[in-house]
Length: 428
Ligand code: HSE
Image (tube, rainbow, N blue to C red; front, side):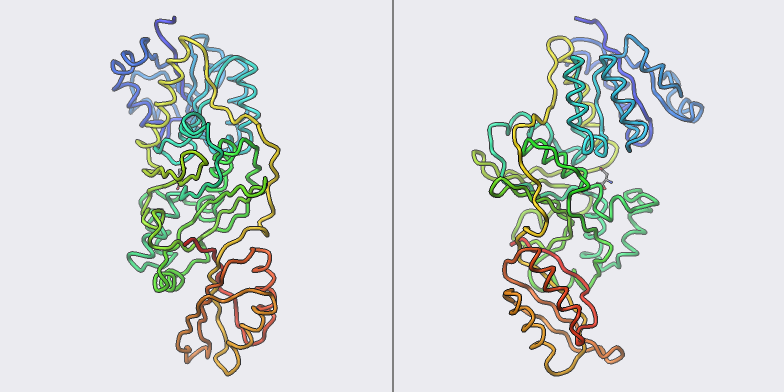
């Protein structure tokens, strides 16, 4: 049993600094928990001087080989983010027999199986609790405690930035633009917010969850992905009037040996627990054949919650170094196809701008009926005098996304329809 276990870090940004502080502060506590000292070895950064000011006794380097070739470093925490060079670094470190703890959702969504297999081949491990849901324990439960279940569905609010923005828009009647500016000012949204607002971040996280829940590789690029940038205050107000809130929801359902994965703004009935998850909180709801429904909720981002997940993995890895190594693997049990999003069945919310003249409603309901889509309710507002258009909000009964898309095509061709402003699925 080693008396001390060397730990190195790749990256010392916001989360990395919180991890460093906690590693230094909780040295004694960790020693007792593990039964061996965690010894901080190297921290890879670009600007050594900048970091040295804050952490005087830490050994910063800008040379990756210092970490790779250090025989005493047994665990490496990867916090660089993105694909390059993070994936290559992780692969090289695993080949060198080092254990990896990472928060990198992009790498784990795109290359999780490859890296896990590499870890197994080299008798080491890769842990990634912080890659989904920030501080919420979800990778551990899916890969251990819920393993006996066949999971049928995952529904998650797994992007804190967009959840914060939609909450602001709903509660403070703020426009999309203002909500984005405020999220950027508070550091929740990046200066380039596309990964969050376009749903890409959530698609990576959904792919990771699917790998563990359904024991299958899901290419994140195959996930139908619609962001929140087209959501207007009007949509939130209509949804509210109808008894719903709008959330960016990541969903995966296993039906007849096919998985449908979708990330899109969704109307959630106010009675549903997920509708009450506001601000930067995340929540993940799972349905399993044995456990039934479980919900995991908590802080989905932020330096300290994320460092909680990272350090939990570090301590677990260190404890295992003394004995055998356990990988969090998404064993490829199943040959499940990812279903085309056309098969995704839901009730839908449609908001249209229509010319305010006789026969419009009849024309639209005619088109809906031709496509065998049944209307559940309708709201029409008084027309806007300037544009001479009215807003029409339709709620449909259950239909497949494919059928809804063909009805939208037909409605778009209807002269009396100015535009189809929004189309969103509903959970109730
Ligand atoms: N951008 C992410 C979010 C951070 O907003 O949830 C955590 O992955």
